[in-house]
Structure formats: structure tokens, C-alpha cells
Image (cartoon, rainbow, N blue to C red):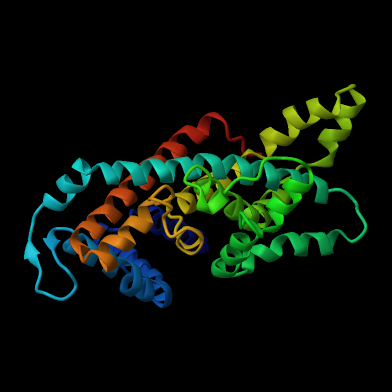
Length: 313
């Protein structure tokens, strides 16, 4: 009797589940997932997705924030693409990213390698280097504006004592963007250091010991072990730094205001000016969507290309 019951149970278990029951189970699971996502999904929808949809709608209108909106279609986009100032601010933003990214990565990697060793007071050094990351951008920008003051700044005082040229920094059109890059890299070094330090500590020490036994030099160990196994952390740092770099605004606004003569104006700064100085909110929204498209394209290319150089253990 028990054998017959066992066979019946086996047949029932092997019998395919009806499609309606599978759909009901899937809907039930989806309902539970949605229920647990609501605490984060609702604020995301209200404060992120809704403003994005609103800005897309505004980009199709002419609006000065006061008068009623007038339908413009794609005129705002065509006007921006034909405006030489749009190309200029995009080139300035690209120049900022190209100067900022290598500086912050190489500096962060150097700090991570130094603090990955057994040093006295290592935790204190890590905290000190990370402190600028949690400091307000306004404070950092004001401090660096004082440090790079051409007439009374500490940097030019040191350069003058060493007999080196003393640039005009944020007052000179040729050096204004470089001033912003220096302050940005200094502030973000700690963030990059922490990410790369975590990646370094995840590399097995056995690999270094085996390479040392085989006679590999320090450079070869760094090139063939550290850099490949650090590539996931490097990929994360590059993606985040590029996204943040293309959205640079605070330090430019405080240090240079986009000047002198527009030499350090960036895309987000242009969006701000179009909205609050010139009353062209439609064009500002269109410019923000052009920037979003550029960031999305670059990020997608990075995700596609990362398979060729990122090595996951």
C-alpha cells in the first residue's frame, strides 16, 4: 500500500504544473518583490523619475519660469546643436574629464599602494586622506581659491620661493580650468584610494609570493598581478569618475563662475545660466538631456568594452 502511495506521489510531483498556476505564482512573487521595493521605489519615482519626465516635457517648450509654456517641439535641441557656445562648453567639460581622471586615478592608486603596506598609524593616514571626500564642495572650492590666489595664495608663494613661474590660476583664462581640475582631484583622491585599497586587499598574497620565488621583479608583479586583478575596482572608479566629471558644477561655480571670459564654463554651468540668468528653461532642459545622452553613451561603451580588459577572479 505504501509503495502504491509512493508511486502516486511521484507521478503527481512529475506532473507538469498548469500554466495558469505558474502565472499566478509568478504574479504572487512579483507582488511580494514590489511590496519590499516600495520604500525605495516610491521616493525614486517621486524625486528622480518624475523630475526626469518633467524636464523632458519642458525641453519641448519655450518657458521662462514665469509665463505659460509654449510648444517648441525639437527647436530647443536644434538651436543648441547649432549654437557654438554649446560646443564650447562640451569641449571644456571633456577637457576637464581628460585632465581630472588620470590625475585622480594615478594619485589614488599611489596612495592605495602606500597605505596597503604595514605602516605605523596607517588607519590615521587613511582617515586623513579620506577627510576631503566628506567635506563640502563649497568649503573645498573656497580653500583652493585662496590657495591659488595669484597675488596672495600659498601655492604661488611657494613657486616664487623656488624661482618657478607663478601662473594666474583661476584669474587666467589659460589656467582657470586647470585650477578646477587640481581642486577636484585633491578632493576625490580619498574616494579613489578607498576603492582601490579594497581591491588591493582582495588580491591573494600567494600570487605575490609565487611570483617572487620565480624571480619576478616588483614592476613585473605590479604589471602582471596587481593591475589585472585590480581591474574590477579600476573599472568602477573610471565609470563613477567619468559620470561625476561630466556633471562638474559646484567647484566651477564657486571658484571661477565659468570665467574668466567663459574659459572654464562647463555643461552644467551652462544649464544653470540658461535657466536662472537668461530665462530659457526649455533650452536648459534640452541641454541636460543632451548631456544625459552623452553620459549614457559613454557608460554603455565602457560596459561593452570592459569585457576585454576587466578580469574577474
